[in-house]
Amino acid sequence: MDIEAIENQMIPNGRVILAGVGRLGIRVGINLLQIHRGGPRTITAVDGQKISGSDIIFHMLGGENGQYKVDLLSKLSTHPADYRAVEPVKEDLNPENMDIVKGDVVSIQIAGGNTIPTTAAIIRKAHENGARTISTAGVFGIDEPVSAMDISKADEENPIIAELKRQGVERNHTIVTTGKVLRDRLPITPYTLDEMARVLTIEILKAL
Image: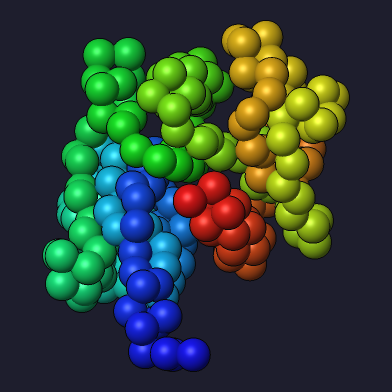
């Protein structure tokens, strides 16, 4: 067995779209940057938001107030561009720029307000392009386990699941969730985000 030849074949491949690079998305992005002997060839990070004073994880990573979050992820990548590239897109996805959603796997971590219509639109566009899709359905909790499943098997008592299904996302879409949403009045904890990011990364790699 030629070990070196096998190692040389295990190179990055494919494109991952990270829709949303907030407190959760930045964690997923860093995980993907660190994948060795595989993982994505290109990470397209899409988010129009800038770092603010309360974005602690970004400051811990060396970010500065007013810096685009996607630019920080790009800066954190020290790979040669021909090995793994980070493409920062300083826009929030909306119906007018859905042409950005081109890749092999689309992972959606957008937050703030009612993001479900936008999430559903991204999923539909990604499926049109033949991409696999992943999104969250509750990131709240103190000690709740994180689960991943196809949306067809997800609990419809979860209002995010129910609304995605009403908008036509009924199968072939992976949900990652604690099962706890805003109505449960639980905090979002950094260690839960770490675990969410771990599971999201696993699902991205499976889909690749």
